[in-house]
Image 1 (cartoon, rainbow, N blue to C red):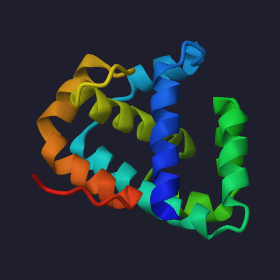
Image 2: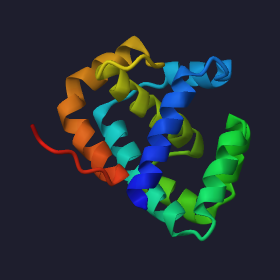
Image 3: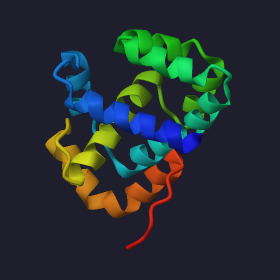
Length: 150
């Protein structure tokens, strides 16, 4: 089930990244977000905990569907109103906005580094290329994906 959700997250991220309907505010926030290795590690750790938390909820699928329909501001407000979610972010020294922009920025930079056409700043693309072999296994583990080694 967790890997199914991870695939949905990945598909949603890719669809958002390639969508001409991506709000300009979201696109610019992703382009402005500066990835660093410590920040990427914080985002991945928080993402893993957040995925486990959301998957533990009886209405996980409904929550994910509803999240896709919210504006960035509505999504941040919803996240900030959830004490458990905010505890996860606080533990990882992240704000709701950092998480909501940082995770897609990281995912998109990693996808771009692997050749996908997506939204990524030149500096985040360079960062992702430099750290690809280190970050992909961490993202896969956080997503519950096991890749076969060549």
